[in-house]
Image 1 (cartoon, rainbow, N blue to C red):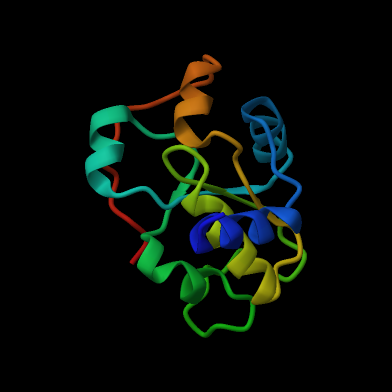
Image 2 (image 1 turned 120 degrees about the horizontal axis):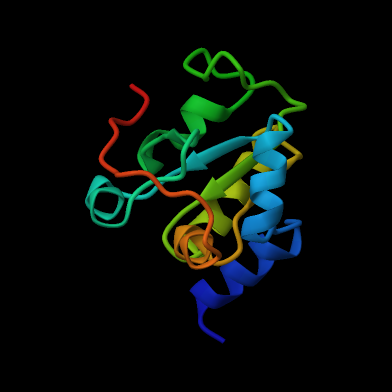
Length: 131
């Protein structure tokens, strides 16, 4: 097993990864869906309505509960579902968020592409990231 495969396996061992349908249910119940995909992917494939766009390079600062730059709605009890293209980088990101104090952080198994394939709502993409 490669080092990156091992890292991914360890990250996922601590996550309760969610299906697209479960992610939608969590979002409707107040969970924060965070799209970390690059703008080029969002423009080409669309976005999940209501998801917050946070560039991957800013994720920890915008979501760590004790960060002075965090999104105002984020607390240690927040449920956060991280979304990437196919569910790989989102697993690593969600594990990072757990280590930073968000025990209810997880990711969307299969990523945005699984969401779209499940026939869930998609809107045109290209929204700006949260500054």
